[in-house]
Length: 394
Figure 1 (cartoon, rainbow, N blue to C red):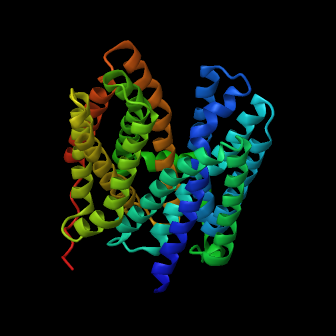
Figure 2: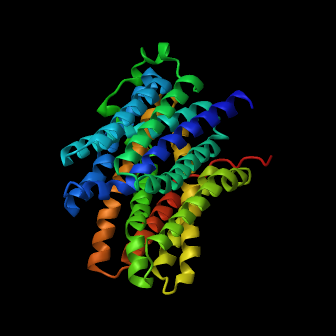
Figure 3: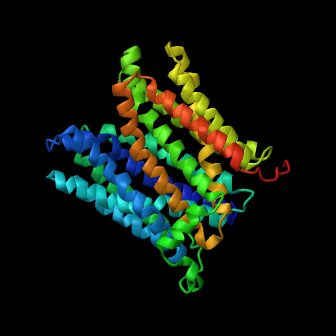
């Protein structure tokens, strides 16, 4: 295994363990909050707290990693998550529960650091493939985490939190002993390009094609999170499905997305450009959402979800790769952090508006609106994004 592959495997492991710990906790939060007599509104706010503080922290952590090094910031953020999990396990009041999620939200922006690390160790030709590997680690952690968390919750609701803290400590030691620093901090700490500023963030947003990509990424995450929030309600209302069947459906989404990012995307990158694959992924995602809105029989659910998973699997890695290619290396962390912020913003508003559409209109309305939004993103990208040169087959 060469140095690049070893570094890629290490960052894959770090992200997988990190997201596995996060996945242990997320599905259990409503039940934990109910033990403190939280209202549905308070539970919704508790879940949104993580994404809200991640929105603010992601570009800051990314910029700090540009200036002081990826490894240092990863370690600091991972330690913060460990404290958040421990506090969650020890919490005996609702305010402490909110504080635990706030801490984890602030430090949860470290995915942008991991993405910047991948950008550091990959060439432009291989970057989308690297982002796909990272996305697969992300998805794998989310698939396995909730399953293990559900089993551990039978002991107590504190058990998954403490287990997640132990998993978090594993990521700290993995990062310390196996991850090599990629940033020359003796240079970046004296460079004005790596200093934090609101002006710098606004400049990134106004830079093209970054601005278009950020808007598109926000809308895609908005639409996909609306699907995630209302899908189980829709299947229950339309077909009488319960948690078991819906669990299988979400596992299917995760498995297809992982296969797409690890196997299909690298193959397609040999045949086509990142820009073309991004547009293709967005179009397929819109088709999946629109097909779901027309599903009058359960037989349509699996092909619709397959389109959603495949489209998402193509879209995430390519859009982040294109974003990193639009800026110099000393801005990777801040740029990818900004993308994670707007993805988080989409995940905050998507479930809220999706839930309102489900309640006020027909149950399939969230899928229809989301599909039309993503179709609009496809048209925007088709008009504004110029295809990069097609790579030669190898």
